[in-house]
Amino acid sequence: MLHMGADIGIDLGTANVIVNVKGKGVVLKEPSVVAIDKSSGQVIAVGSKARRMLGRTPGNIVAIRPLRDGVIADYDVTEKMLRYFIGRANGNKILFKPRVMVCIPSGVTGVEERAVKQAAIQAGARQAFVIEEPLAAALGAGLDIAQPGGTMVVDIGGGTTDIAVLSLGGVVTSRSLRLGGDKFDEAIVKYIRREFNLAIGERTGEDIKVEIANACPDAAPVLNMQVRGRDLLNGLPREITVTSHQIHSAINENLSQVVNTVKEVLEETPPELASDIMDKGIVLTGGGALLQNIDMLITRETGLNVIIAEDPLSCVALGTGRALTMLDVLNSKPNNRLISSTLKHSMNAV
Image (cartoon, rainbow, N blue to C red; front, side):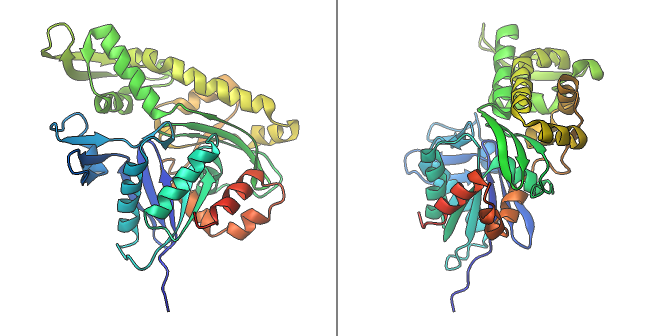
């Protein structure tokens, strides 16, 4: 008798890949980076080891982030990365292929959706399914979305921000912004370059964001950080000091986009569901939920209570795993337009 591999849920994020295995929970959290030898095409490193190589590789090795803005930018490298992670999660049991559920942003095109499913099949899945990020995030956060009551989820990932109001197991209204943690990093890099004539890498930009960025700088003491880079005037290494107020100036425009999109979704929400959201509040998930005081910013702008999920980074991965145990339930919902269409299409052996 042929034994099947375990069910695997994957949060295929622009910044991180998080893998959830049925019965084990989250088993892998690794950066979405692959280091490749350009001459042979051989994979040198994946995940954390590859991320440490960003900006530091010799000429024959390139460190690639194969996903941009929540979608596949380099199909071949994404497939190799998925093969590596599925193999590790499945214990490299080549004969025991798993069922795999991969999350996608709510705004992806049909072509982008098929690319994700095809990559999962090529990487070793016996069946590939996809689920939209806000629905997976809600499931992973432990929210009961099957009831006839409004639930609002804001999932701020590395490449996209997905905002949705859910009810009766489906998406009522939603928006997907091609803006997430990566855009915050880019904004910081550009700000340092413009204001200090100093070139820094994206890794340093992310470190600054994690260490001192604050969505409401007036609500916390000013933090300082030493930053090293290359002087654009003389080409020599130089060190500067930046403050949390300066970094807020760098990312404020991106923060405003997120807040304005939250307001747009609220404006489109039916009154009865809006009333439910007033009672329950907004649930924040994704790595962006860890940005200091971002919950306070959204509360100030909307007047609604904002709750950060218990493990915001893992919510989507946990939700993809939970969705694999609920395929019949999810597909049986007559109003579940989005999950129904994506799952049924995915059940074909792509």
